[in-house]
Image (cartoon, rainbow, N blue to C red; front, side, top):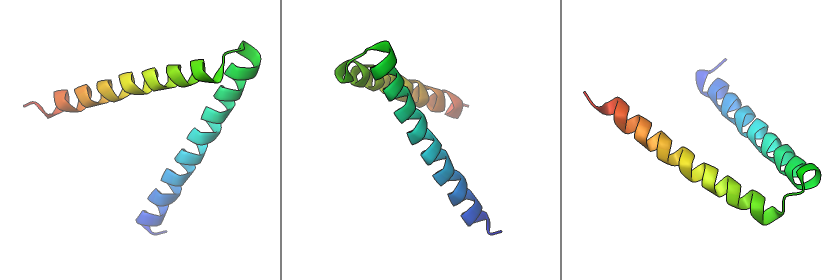
Length: 65
């Protein structure tokens, strides 16, 4: 199998799994926990911002000699 096709299948599978997981978590938080859509959205945006900050900090830390 071509390595590019294998990587593309891996990336597509990973993205599909991420979307399904996000949808399931959103449904669970909205229906079972009782959070509003706005509360879920705010939590996701805050978590994404913290994650991006930590990712940038990690890659800058790794580049230092």
